[in-house]
Image 1 (cartoon, rainbow, N blue to C red):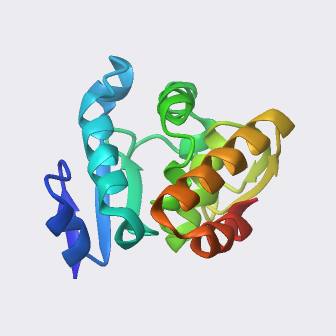
Image 2 (cartoon, rainbow, N blue to C red; image 1 turned 135 degrees about the horizontal axis):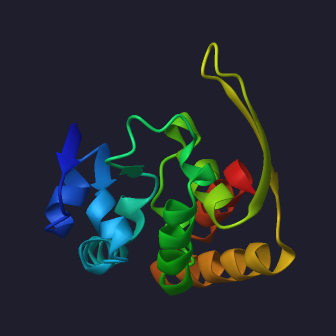
Length: 160
């Protein structure tokens, strides 16, 4: 089942969902308001293995912006702030439409070439070794806690 949530309210909602489309508002980004997303990530954390790969993270209010989300400084800053608290958040993110990689690009440097005619963008993430190590360490620790090291390894291979 495909669900769209303004917030993730319960472990049951996560377990019942195949994909959770979760939109962070432009107002939350501008105000650096992490509360709603933090609350939702805590529920995903409580859900354990059943939360793996279910979160599709999007950003509302940038529909008319031709840049990709990882090119927008305020989104990059917001993602970096949430990453500092939840370095294992990639466990929850889906691989659909490269969501993990796009969010990872927000906290790293990147090279991108965007073709304005067909709106396609080529992305090369320039990995920051410290961010990469901290993310891997946090993901492994999370995997140990929820008894899913193999699942964590599969997730890591999709974007690192």
